[in-house]
Image (cartoon, rainbow, N blue to C red):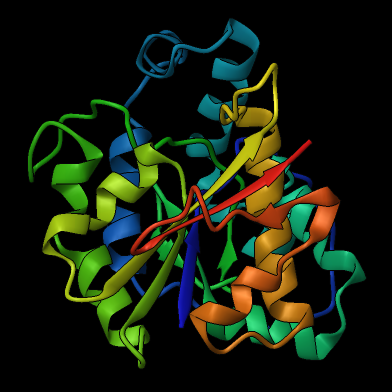
Amino acid sequence: MIAITSPSKTMKEEKIKVRTTKPRLIEDSLILQNEMKRYTTEDLQKLMGISEELAELNYKRFQEIEVAKEYPALFLFKGDVFRGIDAESLSPIEVEYLNKHLRILSGLYGVLRPLDRIKPYRLEMGIRHKNERGKTLYDFWGTKIQRLLEKDCKDNTLVNLASQEYSKAIRLNELNLDVYDIEFREHRNGLYPMISFFAKHARGEMARYMAVNNVQHIDELKSFDYSGYGFNEGFSKDKLLVFTRG
């Protein structure tokens, strides 16, 4: 069983002693890195819809990417999902579980194992970057992410903890795997909407739960109870597992 998640815009560059691996789509990533070096600060600001300060930071990142320090992806990303995982508090065995069972989708690297070493960057999957393979990063990656996930997923089961922007990159309708979507909903005035901030953190907690409990089968996820969530059988159906709280 493999779970997929989105990366994070927020990163924290801290040295950590852990065995790392090389990203498997690095040759494609290097093509993108060279293409991104052609953008000016103003280009990046417009392309990514970010502030001038962030554009300057990422212009510098791409210009200096060849000599930039590398970090294991699981520990570099620090957004809501990764705060939910809280990798620093996991045991080596639990981290190794995630390296086998979690995949992080990435605009710059395609798909990452948690211990793949990467450089700080910002490149969201949904941007419209014209490249030799098309007009978007979805065109650039084509079926490469999909094929790698199919190869990794030995029991044919994929747990989707990624956002729509990133899960679109794996072409769910063409994927030769059993895909289980996970939703987290909050009780509000008699309704159960999904609130993005809480859902992101909960997706990370689900990945953590899998590692802590050495989850091997999809039914084991139904016992997830972090942060007050519980499996809601009434809202769940087929390959959709819904967890609610409140």
